[in-house]
Image (cartoon, rainbow over all chains, first blue to last red; front, side):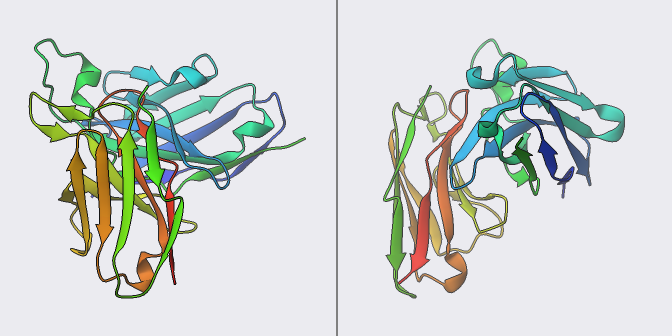
Length: 132
Length: 113
């Protein structure tokens, strides 16, 4: 069973950047996508986007476009999320989650067409605090 | 983008009773080509990450107790917890994976009365 191990808590100054890592154990990144999500204190879950590590293909939620970058290192089965220009509103718990490759129901399938699937394994979360 | 709306925001139910959480999507999440509803339910206990309970609106995940069930189709869905146990205290969230960006309901906090 794949487990996702995330890096430790971070405290950052406004305007700076943060990198969160997510390492898969018990499996590799080759057969699934990794989503990144966040949850502000007392709030619901927010999907930031994801990466298909074997292809390096990324998808970003419009809200975060231009400020977040996803990457992956297949040799270490590790995915990364870089968030820049941090502000206090970015204070949240950040999660990575796995989505297995599913099936495509259209006639012409792009890589992300195989990932209309639920997230079945989640990392424990990384708390990021942005404070001056 | 698809907006997910849950009700109620919180509820308190007695041990052994039934809890019902509702979820509505702003557009249908039913894929007519395979007749599947692209909806999941997650349970999140304090200090823990979400745990997948139900996928495809009604398929219970391995390890999820059979007192949890999901129903509904199209835009209206329900999570039902029968015979409520103390360990079921948590926040329950629905999520659509019909289209990107994935989106979640705001969560329903379940407590013991």
